[in-house]
Length: 465
Figure 1 (tube, rainbow, N blue to C red):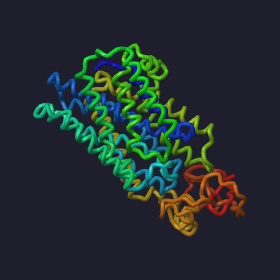
Figure 2 (cartoon, one colour):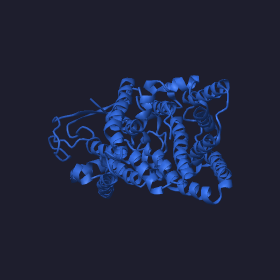
Figure 3 (cartoon, rainbow, N blue to C red):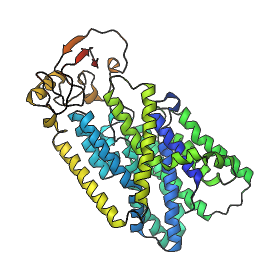
Figure 4 (cartoon, helix red, strand yellow):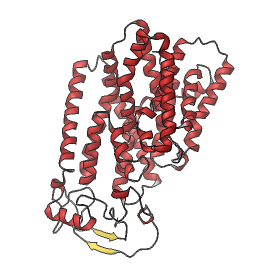
């Protein structure tokens, strides 16, 4: 299909919005709609490719999935591997156990189901889950496990019903999302039945685009594309965490995306803006940047005693874009080239990496986060007495009702400024996430750490100095 720079520019808007939102930059309080923009773009591009193949009579489902594998899996596997390595250094057993479950679910494109059962998207605990963002990849891949077959069947058997069938499914999905955010908001957010209409908007836009004749005036194109871009941008700054999503509010960024795709033709102001080299460059690396950004933010929060500062968040965002560029250049591009990486090499690489990661995930979950490698018996007994949970890494998690009610008491919030009485504890506790040797240690000596640590213990949160 013809390459369109403005679509990469639109991708850049989407990924920058998501990265800024997860970095907790206040001005981008609705940046989560970047995922909705991605869904529409993905639906448009993939359906365009499938429709062109159907029209030419050359559709091959195996070729389609090979292209998807080349596009999605190499970079994903690399980021998953790096995340696992970091988890062994930065996490305690209960966190590693949770990460292991997520790793398994991600490899089977079902992490959205797991998060539906275990994590709200905006909770404090969710911010420390390095693979939370993989829910959107699972939604897309579930869509593309089914959609090509439905499209091919309707094209060959019921071509006249193609558009009406997709509209019917889209309306049903949208109606479900309207019911869902009122009655089951977490399921509504994570699961494909209430998300499919966003991808179908892109698919219907692709069918319309392939059938339409470009005979509209520049004035019409400019007007509709400008309105569309404003619809894309305004929710990023005006929506917030309390705005239901997906819902009828989500029509604003998604329909805006459709308008930009269909009417930001060459010569329009929106086309010139979205075709700027910087935006196009960010759009090209948007997938890899998206993969990297959440693990970076999550580990920065895990390793920070207080909420990460603005400077830390900026550095994390820049780091995500930098690693995204490196992943795009050295992983994405080579693997998408069939001449550089033939199919046999691709299958061996994906099969090997999947097997290794699956083994790590299963062993991490089965061993409760490798707790026997982290804690000796005295250490496990100490944590059991200290926290009420033998594998908890947050000393007052029991008192804060975090595990048991998924709520955070006021005293447990970050940066609580009230003066509190403290107890000084000298020695015996190593740096979080490292297996250190200390005098009379309860942790196994596998990494070097200073002999003594000073801990300040307020009533509901620990601060280390």
